[in-house]
Amino acid sequence: MVSAVQKTKWLGKSWQFLECVGSTQDVAKEWVLSGAPHGAIVVADMQTHGRGRVGRSWFSPPGKNLYFTAALQLPHSHPPLGTLSLLVGVAVAEALRKFDAKVFVKWANDVVSESGRKLAGILIEGFESVPQKVWALVGVGINVNLAENEFPDDLKPTATSLKIICGRELDRFEVLAEVLCSLEFWWEKWAGNEIALLLQAYERLDWLRGKRVRAILPNGAMIEGIAQGITADGELRLILPDGTEQRLVAGDVSVREAVS
Image 1 (cartoon, rainbow, N blue to C red):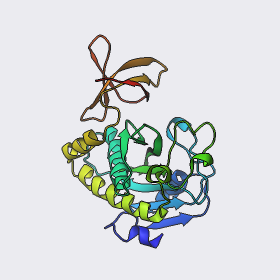
Image 2: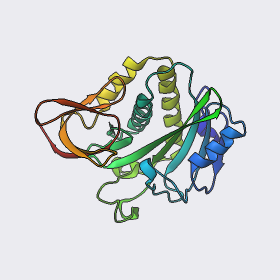
Image 3: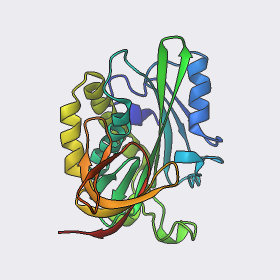
């Protein structure tokens, strides 16, 4: 674990590594409330109640994957919060590409393989520790060394791992080191309002762009259209069948087919 935080300037310099937790998000929040500094991270070998977006569970067996939460204090002036998950997605994808994994970012919170199988998930939860002190708990789960037969049956059609993509096992802490360096770099750009650079990076990694997709909105409504990238606020742009554009702030998106 010590080697994983040696390459960063400030991210992860305060850290906890725990054999088993309910969720790294919960541990990180408690730590912030008791005085954790900006950039503190909580890493677990196993989670018993790992969670993803909208209360979904995250498969978190021991000895195979990466599960961590970074506690980051928001600057007083920052880009739209809708771009924060894009920042983390770009950071994770760029880090994993250093291991020759051809991965992409799928709006809004996933990193996927070329075929669209989910490799990593991102969960961002914000809270105010004291007045005027707002934090983002950036939770990341990355499937590192799981073999295909180790996934639960319900995940086998949609999930993958670095081991499957790269054809070899990787050192989890080497992966963590690269992810932390990348996250630190992109956080500094984002916090410095260099949003144009982030959007350019996202465009290069955008897995949905040009594909026909179906989106289920938070209110249960369903729409279909062709993904046309994102806005400067982090919204997904969809071109509907009638040619109009709709922008999505949130929703679950699945690909129907590619279009030329």
